[in-house]
Figure (cartoon, rainbow, N blue to C red):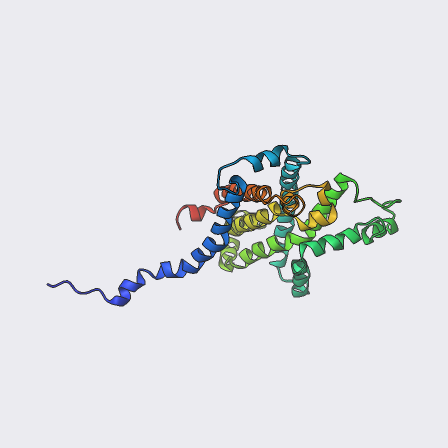
Length: 293
C-alpha cells in the first residue's frame, strides 16, 4: 500500500507553537537580551573592547562608594516589606472572597494606590509624615504622642517611612494576584469539603493554600523584582541617607558619569532577582504541578 501523503495543513500545524512564541522570543531578545549584553560590555570592557575590572574596583573601593550599604538596605527593605505585604494581601484576598455590602467600592479603594507612581507616593507620604503633617496631627489629637515624630533626618525613622510608603503603595500588586488565584478555585472543592465535615482551617490548609501556591509564587516573584529595583520612594524620602542599589546606579550614571559602574549595579540587581526567583520557583511549586498533573 503506497504511503499516503501528509496534508500540508498537518505539516504546518507542527510549527504552530513556534510561531505563537515568536513574538515573545523577539521581545526577550530585543528588550532583555540586547540590553543585558550591552550592560555586560559596559561593566567589564573598556572603550577599546579589552576586558577590565576597573568598574568593579571603583564600585567596591572608589571614593564615596556606598555599595555595601546599598546592598544591605536593598535586601533589608525587601526582607521587611515583602512578608508584611504578602500577609496583608493574603488577609485582604480572603476577606474580599466573601460577600459583604460595599465590596466593589472597597475593592477599588484597595487597588487605588496602583494608579500612583512611586515618586508621587513618596511625595504624598513625605508631606503626611512631616513634622506638622497629617500623621502627626492625628496622633497628637488622639493624645497618643505629645510631640511630633521626626521621620526625616534620622536614618532609622527614614527607613520606617520608606516601609510605610511601600506597603501602602505596592501591597495592591500582591493582593490582585492572590485574589485572582482565589477566584479560580472551584466552589465544588468547598462543597465537597463541607460534605465530609471539614473545618474552616482544614479547608484553608488542604484546599485553599495548596491551590493558591502558583499565584503566591507569581506574586512573590513580581514583588521581589520590584523590591530590588526600589528607587523613587527611597530617593524622595531619604535620598542617599538610605542608599539602595537602583539609587546608586542612578547616581553613578547621572552624577559620576560612569555608565560602566551603573551597568554593574544593574547586573547585580538582575543577579539578585534571578537567584531569589529561582528559590521561589523551587520552594513554592504546587504539589500537583510537581506530580505532572
